[in-house]
Length: 107
Image (cartoon, helix red, strand yellow):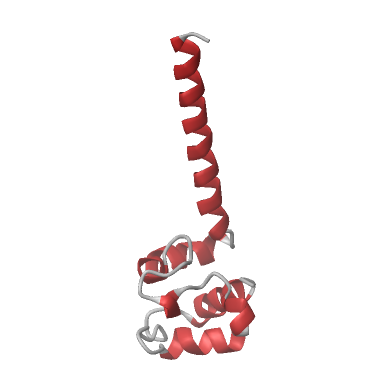
């Protein structure tokens, strides 16, 4: 095996890892375009694009649908939580409903 083949193999491997990594990240934000726009604009700062949370364990949304139903999630979005501010004044009812429904699917 010559040096050129080794370099090509390393570059191909790095490209595949990057591609797979990008796919994994985008899969987390897989909802309707309008809902993802709201999430990116209002939620991603604390909850992260990977939904793992950036503000401690309670901001992790990976499996929130297995802990809470859509109505419970909606109430938290509207009223806030322990460290989460309320969004009833910042989001429309439809945006809140759509976010809650999307998050309830995360099981």
